[in-house]
Amino acid sequence: MSWNVPDDWNCYYTKCENCGSSYHESEGGCDCNGGVANSERPHLEDSNYEFGDDGNWEKVISIKVHTARRDHAKSPVLKGQRYRLWTTRVINDEDGTSWIRKAYSIFK
Image (cartoon, rainbow, N blue to C red):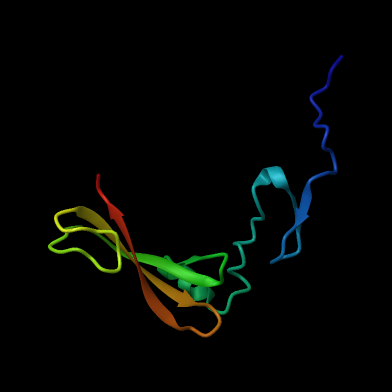
């Protein structure tokens, strides 16, 4: 008679770096909000910012589609190409400094 028992009983457990609880690796991670509770600015989560692994809060503030009128020097976009521009606000959790990050995606 066979039983459906995993052979990794008491194996593959990891301790969460943020809250200290242990979880099995098959669960995909801890349920403790990924460090948001230990951050300096947890109120940003209410404004739809996401806390990243690098310690920064990020939020996409606009996504626009453009047609390039000229070659772009700081990106691979050439004149006449259609591209999508993602604008993201990034806020450092430790000191609160913020900056804008832009990313381009060219339509083919």
